[in-house]
Amino acid sequence: MANLVAILATTHHPFYYRTSRLPAEEAPPFAAAWVRKVEAYRETLTRARPDVLVMVGSDHFHQLWLDNMPQFLVGKAPFYDANYYNEEREFGLPKLLLKGHEELSAYILREGIDRDFDLAFSNELRVDHSITCPIFTVRPQNDLPIVPIYTNIFAPPLPRPERFVRLGRTIRELVDAWPSDLRVAVIGTGHLSLELGGPRQFGAHGPDPEFDAKAVEWIANGDLEGCLSEVTLDSLHAPGNATHGFMDFMLMMGLADGRKADYADNLDLFHTMEAYFTWYPNGVGA
Amino acid sequence: MSKYLVNKFLYTIDRDPELVERYREDPEGTVAWWEAEKAGEILNLPSGERTTWLSFTDEERQALRTHDHVALFAMGAHNFLTLTLWIAMFERDFTEPLGMQLDYAAKLSHFALPYPDIST
Image (cartoon, rainbow over all chains, first blue to last red; front, side, top):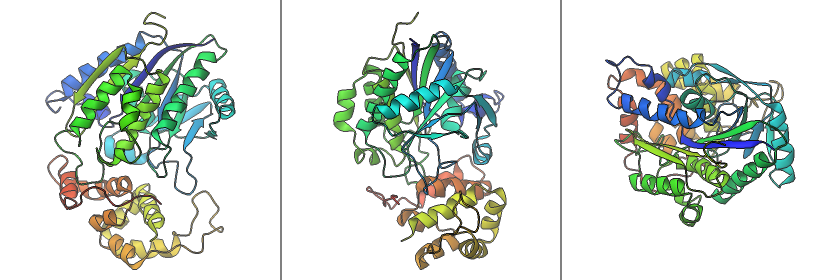
């Protein structure tokens, strides 16, 4: 069976790529600490020596549109072009080409559908910064094949938080049972409290530091019960109008089976709390 | 209400660099042209297979013609689409980093929770 060597759940911040490349004299004061945190986090993936990456993210109205919107979609293609004109324009993100792992995609689709997730699929998917930000942060050499999994955290009606947790648990079962010798890492990105296009956007901290503190505790402790007792589709409007991206963290907590994280770190940035978690389901040296 | 069509306008303008400039410079003309020529295009279909029933309300048309992001927010246009396009069009007019985004937020400061519903 495949070896699930690491689970990473992190925020995806599109400004990191550009900020981390600025010369010291042009860089903002928080840049050096941010780079140090990310480089330390990268090591948590490197040490697990993965062969293939399953990557959970969310399309930001790039390829997926309101005339045909899937709730959960799995890419099944030999390659994925990545990043869009408006991400280059706004964040300075370069275009990328990622390799795909079609066999694992096909397996997740077949088995996932048979376990009551009517997964949509795409044979020609251009992924966006929800997938490429973690490539830039934790695997900048971009040398591993991926299976992208998109969730709808963006265009209501959305699946409920419990559904995200269940999908995470299902992906875990599938990866654990995949008949393969490969070492698999699953990387998912989302948000803590976040406001975009609303009155609370781009403040000195995330829009709801109290929510962020609680969220970091839930994730670090694997406290799914506590998290699910407070988080609903309705409740997520209060911390910020883009906070439904937190449900991707909940998916990852389901994938980690409610276990305490082996690595937890965070960084308070000017308009969001950055957060970095890693689990080693089969032990650090597995 | 045709929130979907407002979102479609924001989406299709934002993804085309020429249309971003055209909408910045000539909002009235761009909105009129788009509603007449583009509103009925289904994005994954040949141009002959058009939707026949989509149009803006007067209020929506006016908000788009006047670059009124506050009115768009009030009517439930998708917050991410509006912000992204506004950054593309207007960030260049501000000198401070995030100046445009903070000005955008300040103009929405009279909104309290719950915000207008963005469901389509």
